[in-house]
Length: 340
Image (tube, rainbow, N blue to C red; front, side):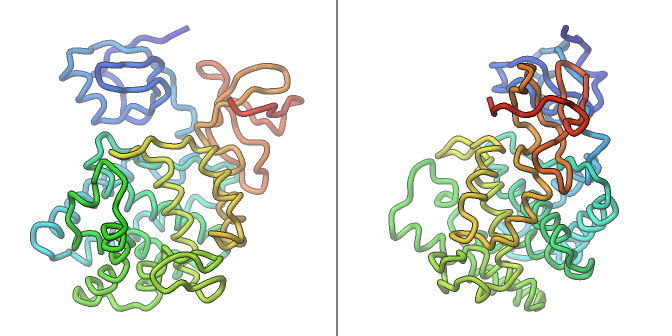
């Protein structure tokens, strides 16, 4: 049974839309943010069906922090495009806030990861930078690195695409496949990223390595240096997975998005090919085999949605059944029969 409420009374992030709204291209199941509230009210939609976002209590990051970080990242990129300057200290602060929140919450057995998803294609650069930082930080923490390095990975991942600011934005957002020559231009963004960091006084070699080598591949088929296996610095190997995961699960002007389960499966299947198997294992430890958002059919034929993963128990996540019933699959006799 649907719960209908006034849009102006909805607390952002705490509820999920329980119907499709074609006028705004909103799909059933998305988390209601402040921006979505604004758009609904502007469109004259004042009452909508919702369900509680049961995953929020397991979040490794407060949703307010995600929103604040996103706004700061957006300001950062705007300044970079317009003035070719960055506020280095502000970006360090963003990455430290992300890292410290994840460090504080990582010991919990249950993990929900509130990634920021774009509302329109122009927002991809901002959301992607933020999401890659969150995912890379989680992978690094899961691999057992000390908190000093976890914080460095967080910053490196936040800056990983900074070199794209030197490439024509129309080429970055081209709603089509790129020519060979255009792709060669795009590939240079890793080199430009290194140059920008040095110009702005960011010269830590670990941080630079994540920016310069996140498109290298474990089998040596990446770019620009075609390094392979342990030749690729560890920051590059970690950020490579975070970069691909967010890219696959984001809708772009030239492609649709994969669901989270398909993207995780792709990363697992490419372990030892594209990705370092140790980094993949840490990624799966955090996201599970069935990542949050995956719809599944249980062996007793109930339909459920995965709302949070469980560390060290990739096959038995937390599920939401119906509007508000939350179950721990480890305590159930049923099991996941298939993904829907």
